[in-house]
Image 1 (cartoon, one colour):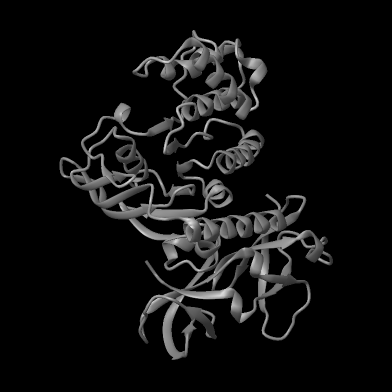
Image 2: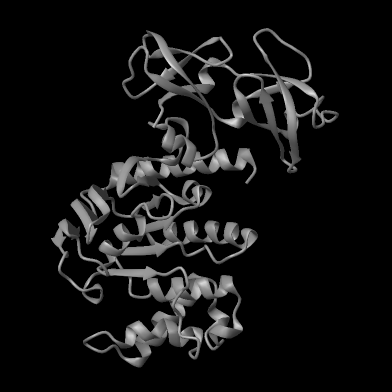
Length: 385
């Protein structure tokens, strides 16, 4: 995703998140002190989370971090070992999935291949009690198909549809019952990169249009950043940080979050002093660098400097304070160029140069010398977790 468009998306998501939070009264769902154990294995550990009406919330983390288990407890497919699950203020911890105002879209869509798109969407409506009339069901199915732009595909068999079309059918089937919560378990994972980006936009537009609360599970950081109002970054069954996409990207509270949300360079060293909200850290090149810090750290503690690749400037000429590096790799990606460079003491460093700033670097090739620097405001000092 081009960096300018990516930044605009982060800003839009943050503004919407602030508006949603400001206008929301109470929460549509809560996890209160929730843990889930499988024998001696604790999949989720003491999660407290309030989900606002109409927001798009994501659980982000690597495989095995507990994000899917948390989603399944909201859905009712798993019961918490400890704690309470509430929807609209009602304790639903003991309710079966079909008794909760919740629908779920699975990674493999779980569509009936022998049924048409319309029949798949109508299936859940036909199970409702008291029974709905055929006319009401047909009307609801048509409106759901129109919402996902598949009105002409009502009689199409599932096996005759593309992956993107099947994903829309799964969404239509999930929204047709007008749930309080729509839970999405990595619904775009099976799509190719181009289609996944298109569906990310459609998914966000659909959520804004319907006003339903969406909760997404994903291990794809770009997907979480581009779609979410808030993101819960998870690790070993715990939520380590919750925030808007921009908060997590610009102000991670740990090395783990900075490394998982976006790409960053990390340089370790002891903290030598403090001046206000700025700490100084001594790195392997023998220089001392000042940077902002968030979590409490102490003089002498080994911490790390975090710098995003797009915040590093690179040139073919030495400037005051710049560091000499050797080009290890160069990848041209159209809107920007990615470089992997090596500093004698600091090691490998990733640099991303936007197209408009790449002039004068075209002749650089593997083995050439270049010079890098960054502004003090671009760096953060984080706990080395």
